[in-house]
Length: 463
Ligand code: S2G
Ligand code: ZN
Image: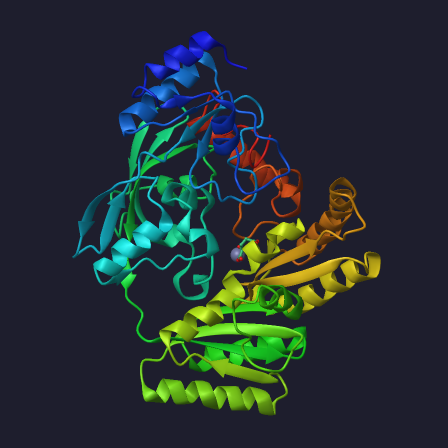
């Protein structure tokens, strides 16, 4: 743990009152949405400029103090948890939009800009920032870049990585790098920008980002379809994908819907109760497209892939249908879920889902397994709710066994043990199921280049 002398020195690097050490602040800023690791930072520092971030990183190098970056604290892999006396660098005061260019369709912003703030800014400019997910109202752009956040529109717009036109970072060595400078084409060697995207702050901290924006989608329309089983998912996806330019294709099981409807504040999509549900979205750019969607619905019903369905007729109904999917995470949080965020290639999803579901059901029939996720891009969220008859520790001990089955199955399917939530500390010990020893060695060599003293978010991704 660093001593008071060093804390006093740290205070000289930022504005007065921007270093906190009180218990509440340490607890609040030393964690993210995960709960497996108790936050135990030494201090929280709130820089307001690139220069202050650089001064803090140089100070940390001088005194070999570990730093942990903190954005919206909505992470799900403990990548922003300071559990070992680190200093947390919180970007809440670096939250300004600095520039906008209509021709480039680009916004330059500080890392503490909240995702929804950027989405709203784009809308004011009659443009669109297309990376969206349930925590967009709290997460920050710097953290989205650090984890290469994905979410619900990846099938059309890709991950955060696709929208970063330029990055300014302070490396672990305290160097300021200005990467790619907003260019579309730039074939001048390694694209170092990409290394920092998804690196969870282990190579350097994002201190400014130039994000690209997209044209606004028109007349977004959603359908929720009731499906009989896992096997119906892919043919339904293919039927719609072959004729419509989908912006989303999500799924959730009946257990997820039951939890949502039990809240009593969101209407059921339709009368019948189905084992699975798909939520798809597209731009109804013309009468022809809207008719095609209805023809596809009828075709899927005839094929037995779909049992029932509803199509949004208004902006409000579109929002209500999306809440059935997007509110799952917050709705099940009180049930202490064991969470996994895995991906396989889309073609292998049905076999993977069925195999994994059978393994868990055979070994823990009393576990309430909830499946939901971004099935259109192969990303599944397996959540298991803690049974009342098990203590938290007993439950998570059993889930460690489930982890093994999950990751062994992911490995056999050449999948990813973390599709969009990052590795952090929760998945660190399982990295080998998705990455080879040679790859991990290369990642560690890259870390040594950018963070020679190992002060940048140590213990995240790998030890
Ligand atoms: C989602 C949110 C976090 C979770 O809902 O798509 O990424 O796993 C998740 O509940
Ligand atoms: Zn997700």
